[in-house]
Length: 368
Image 1 (cartoon, rainbow, N blue to C red):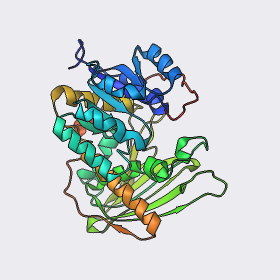
Image 2 (tube, rainbow, N blue to C red):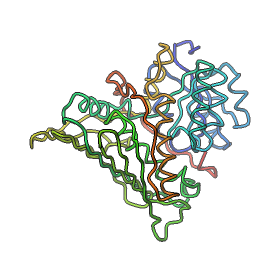
Image 3 (cartoon, rainbow, N blue to C red):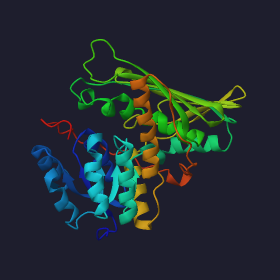
């Protein structure tokens, strides 16, 4: 049950940068959500963040106690990817709703286990595709569906950043590397823009000389869809920050940059080019995390199914697993066809103002 003000009560699982710098401030921008608990293995973060947001701190080994406490309705899980199942599964089995960072898991089996647990208990499971609630992104998807550029045929994207060698993502293999950390953004974008699933997956990768990472740091992926449509995207941990995509159709194109990021100064807009004429479509900077949280809480309060559900998360993980196999074998991977999804809807767009972010509490446990 929500609190006395009718707000969904969240516990934040893991106090790393994405929690501190995005989710926790964003909750305060909503009118239907509140944080009541924090789960962390770092005693300094536990104390400081609990004091800042008036939360009850729990250690990881106390998670079962939290689930039975009656003080939360939902959890936001932002642990490293390989720990998602560890916390999502018992929460769902306890009937606690789960907002889970992407990628959903590090295996298809883990995704299916979570989906099954949600179906058994009736708890809602949403993967944190924040862009599904971002107005510019939602509008681009609608433009394509309405035929603004004719039939979409070719998608190309680049998403790069220069990752600190001390970051755990540089040390934790493929399922923490750029293909799985950054790849879901262009992958999810093209799946929604095309409104279909890739059938063939191929990938090549390089390891930049001198970069201390134990998985390829730059990966280029090619996806072939039904009706001979193509998508190509490149992600990297070893290049200056860049994010852009181009979608070419039979009658025009969409160009977007920035298109995947968030935060101060990041307003996601796009250029629509048809018959040689360019129109610019601008949207304000919004709080992505507040928007997705408000949407998920509305789904809980109104008992409606969240659009970016476990099936949506699994579909991306299915492709990420195929990319891993393609890199390992050097051979293109074939995927079985899947039924179409309803996909992103205009009603999901949220335009909450960007929250002020307090100073980051960085301690000896940077991955938590």
